[in-house]
Amino acid sequence: MKKIAILGSTGSIGTQTLEIVRDNPDLKVTGLCAGKNVDLLEKQVREFMPELAVMGDEKCAEDLKHRISDLPVKVLSGMDGMIELATMQSSDMLLTAIVGMIGIRPTIAAINAGKDIALANKETLVCAGHIIIPLAKEKNVGIYPVDSEHSAIFQSMHGENKERINKILLTASGGPFRGMKRDELKDKTRFDALKHPNWNMGNKITIDSATLVNKGLEVMEAGWLFGVPREKIEVVIHPQSIIHSMVEYVDGGIMAQLGMPDMKLPIQYAIFYPDRRPLKGKKVDFFDLKSISFEEPDIETFSGLKMAYEAMDKGGSMPTVFNAANEKAVALFLNDRIRFLEIYDIIRDAMDAHSVISNPSVDDILQSEQEVYERIRAGWGDI
Image (tube, rainbow, N blue to C red; front, top):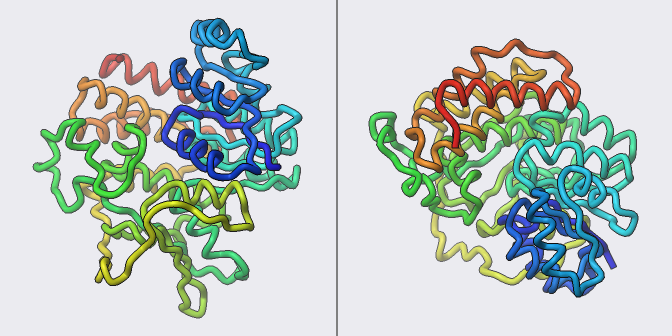
């Protein structure tokens, strides 16, 4: 029996993880955590009967506690609750799918407690990779990527000599606006941006896919996960989303992982690594597919990727600023407070205003985040 705790159980990754649990009776959920979705968390608690349920919001936790008072389930709230969930003695693995830098402290706590990490929280490595990766090595803890691209890279390195990597080829669908120029993007609405051609994801990551910011964040993650410098990570637009990423070795050989665009595959692979389990769903039919294609990303139009390269090169606290500015800008866009192209303007402004901290602590990271938020509130308002 493998026991897992889930940070972010009511989101897209969390709910798909629970679908995998339903299909694998040797998986046990020990803890569930959500932000404010009391209705769904109550249903999940009643179905999976964890030892601990955590709500990010204290009032929501009180509501949940009242609703499930008939069950022997402990209910906590806030960061203290998340850290208790991350370190609970009965779990083997923490799956961290919560959105935002709020996931950093629980992940560090879980690593210190010797828990393996199934990682779907981008901010953990983008902002604190210099803390997380050395700590995981020190504690002999496995970090298993849940992103489809990083899972593909991880699988393509299996059994290979990592010293012989020539470059990582990180694939991107191009999102709903692939091939468009800035004039065509200026009036795009959130409804347009949320129409991803291939993937079923949460709203924030879907917007990030439309701006190519998501791919920039993935470049930063890949650098930390696989110990590869930015100049050895190349983004390739692959509209069909069948090749999830590739690794080229020094002899010119390229290993690729292919599959349908279904997040359950990388989630399940992370949970059961190095085993593979049967997975329901459509498989790739090459006769139906017929062809696949590749394009170079347009980093002038979709400047989120270009600014991500800059943030990675500057290092220190700059990736935090890039991520925090984007997070707030996407929230404003999703609430119809700014236009699509203003997402880039907000990121650019925040990066230009920041003085880099070369080796930031967790407190420095969170302080930089708050400074970015305050600057954006002053310039663009709040939601």
